[in-house]
Image (cartoon, rainbow, N blue to C red; front, side, top):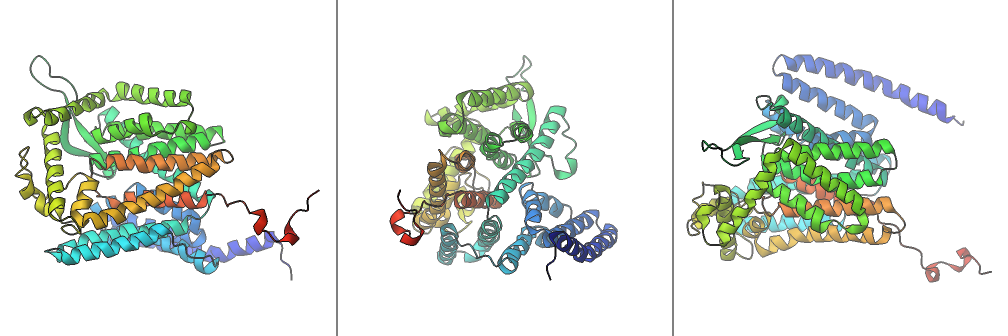
Length: 503
């Protein structure tokens, strides 16, 4: 018997209806039960059930919800409200449900990319480095974080996001998360609402920065640095600034006028939020991206000039202190000129950390001191540098130096081989699509700039909150894979019976 598509769709909806009803009632009951103990635990349980329900009914669309929660750091916020970290911190494992749907229901193949193999090799290096370290038991946390937030997350993302439509939706969801985070922070900064953290979504750090010259009384104007839902101002700035090239790429490749305006609005919110972090590293990365890295074919000069002008106007109008903050980068010349006392304490501290980490690497060049072990040694090594006495367990604040000190040349080589393979794939997409597929060309270019922007910020930051790095690298890997056009068939390889006869 042949069933019409309309009757089939109606039957599918009727079969799904009992599942939706039971899940909805269970969610309400669970929410009431948990609200008596912890309202945030109730909210977490309700959200988890709704996500699970959405994944069952529409796996691909529900994966987008998981991506939004991941990038907006919502799971960490509910952990801080009392929800067990084992539950909230592993929520992205729900991506295993759409993966199961693709592998079992659709009978699609498992995707194992060269980067996945390199990530497995990197795990082996971490284990080897831990084995030869003097305290291997202290490396467990670093290895566990990489395994869960690195290897597993990357593997799930590249297997769930398999086509152009899903890739584009994922990029929009990530940009939306950045716009929401940046928008709340932008409002908090412009309104001066420093006493309201908006439920943890707009956190204020204890550190204040000077944002102008001192007045006639000798007082220097200062402002608090905002950290969004991340809770760390420099990391929050990094999470936002890497979205700038992706947002520009989406705006330029969007065919609908509403989509283009949405992208430009998101760009302003992301930049606005970044300004109130007063992060100099993010400002340097943004400047390098605009002035040096931006490939000319990606964007017309007048559009580039308009974006640059908008950034300057935004900074001067709403956060002029950020411009002053960037001007203090001149303190670095005091270190180079041999007068460290003229540099601010932040610059002195970073210089001490970097030089100490470099010396740690030189003493342990092959496999390093062990994953996550560099902070144990920085204070002692830093004593001989002479710029500033460091607090115990300080991080290197430099991804490259810390990776060298932690895992040596072996780990460093494998780590950045993953980056090299990913960028090579993206450049191949740009080369093959420059003339025939402008959308793919723009998205690949935006992803290249996003990765390179992260690498610039990594000069000033170590690899904490590493799920953002591996998630970004996974999206770049997906972009390189799904946007690469199939090679044209060689006429000599095509059987004679399918060739078009010559006239």
